[in-house]
Length: 194
Image 1 (cartoon, rainbow, N blue to C red):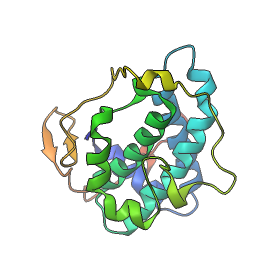
Image 2: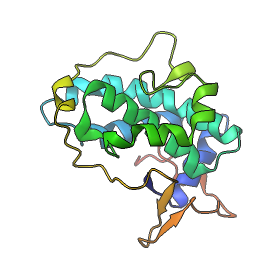
Image 3: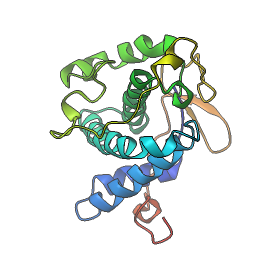
C-alpha cells in the first residue's frame, strides 16, 4: 500500500502515546479519517456511513498503538489500520472508498498475517479483538458493487511492502525514520483550529 508520511504523522503517534492528550488526539484523528473517507463515498451514502466510520476508526486507533508496541514502524502500524478499514469497506461493498483493489486483499492480509492472526483479524472480521464490546454502528451495505467493483481511489501494485510518499513526492520503501524532534502540537486535535 502507498501511504503519505510526514512530520505530522509522528506528532499524531506521540500524541496517541501521551497520557492526558491521547483522548483528544484520538477524537481528532477519528474525525479526520471519517471526513476523508466519507468524502470518498458516493455522495448520497456518505451521511449513512459516518457513525460506522467513527466506530471503525476509533477501534483501529487501538490496533495502531498495539502494532507500535509490538515493534512495527509508524508506517507499518498505520498501514495495518488502513488494511483493516479496507477489509471493512470491501465487506460492505463500499468499493469506491477502497485504497487498493479487491484482488489485493489477500496479499495485504498475508504481509501482516502474524499480527492479524494474533488479534483474530480476518478479512471478514476486520477488527478482530479490537472490536468494541458493543460493536460498531451498523451502516447500509452496497453488495451489488462487488459484482463490478470500481475503485477510483485505489492504487494497485503496492501489496508487497509499505510504500511511503514523502512530502516532495519521492516514494520510499518502509517509510521515514522518526525525526529527532517531534512537535506534538502538530497533532490533530491538539490545536484549536483542528
